[in-house]
Image (tube, rainbow, N blue to C red; front, side):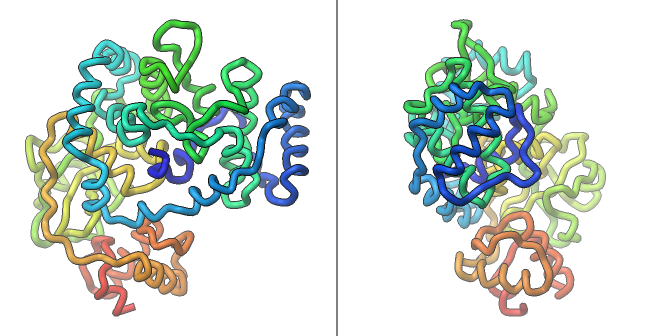
Length: 390
């Protein structure tokens, strides 16, 4: 389900460093020649680079997919309900039983809870049933040539060449997501080199056809990103009617005793004795969660806040958590209204990134700051009332 991928798995780790300012644009043929020259300077044989690039073509469908991020304009409740179904839960639990011994290895070797990987497996490819039909070499070179994020994708081209040189990548036949990810849990070539695991013992890492390879590789990658064994990642909570809502938001951790003193309570069980941030995806009238340190690792897989929160929440559901209490959040903004808001915030000097109608981290921070300035509940949830006041 490659439409869920945002910013190509976020801060992908590659075996080669990104250039300070990657070359991009211009003639596609000349760009390919430049790729060959750099590949050779990196130690790739000229004949290998020639064979890899021979069939590569620019793919306009990749660029259209890259610009089509409308799904991320949906608020959390809508987005999560769209992605999470009883069938996905039932299938996930069936897969957990089918691959129980593999998940045991993931948990033993990498400390990653099986439900976390199951949730990614579900959202990325519907448990491997649809892994994407874009030619991967074309996708990577097209996105490296495009000047929106060349520093992310250019190193991935050379990583794919390394896989090709090792006999593990076919530039004419390897397919995957529009952003160049491959396999059941959708990994970029550099991540495959860094974290690929031969889980079934056949002597090769085959992320498209081997569930053990894919799951163990995904577990190793999460460990590489900093996953902390035995710790939770997300917990639903209830919040009081009044508190300092400006304390909420990603990256604002406090200890459990502090949250308890403010009236935050676990909906079930007890709060973990760990630093945690209070997450209010649709404001203080909507769902509420505490996000523990492992939650931050999700952003190394994907940069979309809504995707990350939904994936983390789904993992808790697979582990037996109940459906979240949706509450009664204030009405939010439609895509056009959100773009108007971002334009106004940008004019006030806030860095909201691209004017795209998506409530990302920069826009949330700016909204919270303006809410506080205007004496509104500073919960980072933009409403028509806020837009009107601006």
